Amino acid sequence: MSSGENKLVELKIAGRYRMIPVWATKFEFEVRPSPKFDNRAWKLWKPILKLLAKVIREEKIKIKWVRIHSHFNLRGDIPHAMGWWDHEDKSMFLCHFDKETLLHELGHALSSGYHGDPWAKQTSRLFLKYLKGKEQKQAMNNLAHYLSGRRIYKKIYNEKPPKYKDPKSMWLNLKPTGPKGAK
Image (cartoon, rainbow, N blue to C red; front, side, top):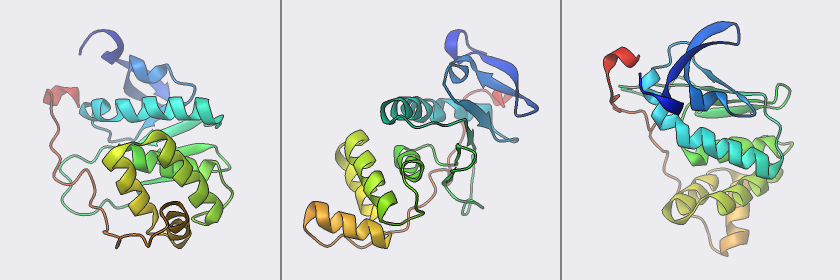
């Protein structure tokens, strides 16, 4: 184990003991790694969870907890959604450690609808505020996959959105780094 904020500590989270880095205990929300979470994935999640803390503070979003996953050596599709937001629980599930998925789910937290116009407006606003350059362009292109997102895209850019390309999982063939014992 490394020292300082990256040191893993054992905590009881949601009724189960988990190894979690010290930095992940400092948020306003609880971080819940999935039962088979590979601790080598913490470094991938750190910037996303820090962005989550920043966005919920700035946007005044209440969130109780977030469940995160790891899927190293994935060979096919992930067997579940990349993420989702639970309005009743004020909780989030994230499978992809990317800003776009995070902001997509926070768009749900800020709106009442599923993938309707209120969600697309909030999500595009978050993309434009928190993403830059290629990352922003790709997120806006992906937003246009939804009918409501296409309407927003056309309104912002005054042009038809590009053809949607189904994104591959970022876990696909990703190998863990670090000592195997960190698992």
